[in-house]
Amino acid sequence: MSNVMSKFLEGVVGGLRIRTWLCFAFFAANFLIAHGAARYWRLNASPLELVIGVISTVLLLFILSEPAK
Amino acid sequence: MQEEKGITSRRDTPEALRERSYLAELNKKPLLQRWRGYLKLSGPAAVEAATTLGAGSFASAVVMGAAYGYKMLWIPLYSYGLGLFMLALAARFVAASDIPIIEAQNKYHTRLVGTFATGIVACYLAMVVFTFGQYALGSDALESLFSLVGINFPRSSNWIIIFIISAFLSLMYGRRGSIRYVRYVENALKLMIAIMLITFLAVVLKTGVNIRAMLRGLLIPTVPRGIEGITIAIAGLTAAMGVGDWVQFHYAMHARGFSDQHEPLARFDMTFMGLLPVTVVLSLVSIAFAEVYSGNPNIPLDSSELAAGLVGVLPSVWIKAAFFIGIEAICISTVVGMSILGATAFCQAVGWAPDPDTLHWKILIMTPQIGLLGAFLGKPIWAVITVASLQSLFNWLSGISWYLLGNDKRYLGEKCVKSRFFNLCILLSVTVLNLVFFTFILSKLGVWPE
Image 1 (cartoon, rainbow over the protein chains, first blue to last red):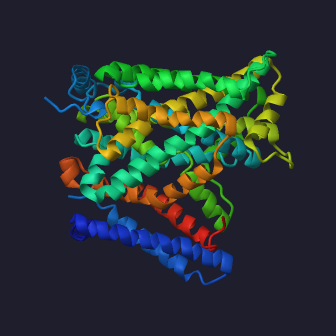
Image 2: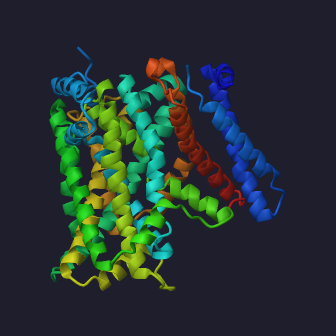
């Protein structure tokens, strides 16, 4: 299973160009955390943006931490 | 024959080649024997630690200790601990490639990232502006030190002591194309770090320490709930380590001629000459202030007033003197480290050889000494805010660039990052820099608290 996952991730971040674009997606996910936290704690808005930010950041951390083969 | 590029072309010198073949043998020896050998060869991390341990981190440690007691002791340990992975990446770049980092960023990621974000903003401008604070604190401490023995030696004239020592050591770094002069400066900085450790330990022995609270504060991070907690966590994790520190360590290794055989030495160096002294010195400072101001509801907000309060309760003139000498070591060593980094980064940014025997290097290494005006004027707040804002805006670019270079076979070949854990920790550092950027922008828009 982990071998399959590793092969899949390698396919995703195997190229430097796609890794670079994923870094920008990661950047956007971090924005959702900061903006979502401010909206949730300061404006009492729904925590949805914060939750989406945290989940997408964790997901991208998992994908981007795959080393180049 | 390698082209002369100054401190970035030292790995083929006879001294470096000798050290490399010695390390090839040493790296196979048992742990303790290896560490003993590494200890003798350590040094680049001391240059980095000397730069980190400056007036800014001292003031933060003072205020944190006085305001929060032992609760924020974790900040230097965790901040530097996270930064260790970026230092390890800096060592990998040196071990696997002849191209220094700013050149590599220019080559693979445009000049906006290398020259501008890393060379000029994160390193050169920051080093020039932040020396004002070193002179302001250092000259203040010298005035107080001399007043202990009834001598009036005001800031307006005592700055010359800081200037002479720091300019002498900065100009000595790497001169005559020799690694020997790099090591002299490294040893001088190690001595100053040892002075900080001894003097602040002497102070803490007098103020007392609550061992249990210390261990809890050091190991268990605590932050308030909600947005204030996130702000403190972000500020805490960037407190002791930034892009300038990664770059400093990288070029300090180049200046010593580090190559592939040096990577284990570099990791030993960053742990025992970087993490350990930085954490211990800042923790000792925080503990002293935590003990003196514990339970006091009306603590002063200014770090110099806080320091005056601490000195007031120290019983012996020798311990008071030790406290001021420790501060002096902090300021002088930081000016030296900042001058070296400023000159190296500027040369790399504009494509000049970082050669200590050239006129442009000598002029560049002296430019941060403009900070001596800090002895007269204090810190120029507008300049500090401008540079800190620029860093908040652009440091994330450097962070992402370092991560990508760590995974770039064009740069590192087969030595690019192979560990998921290593990559993850680099990405966590990048996350912190991204959050610094967003919280800065959002605070300017009034969405995030200032």
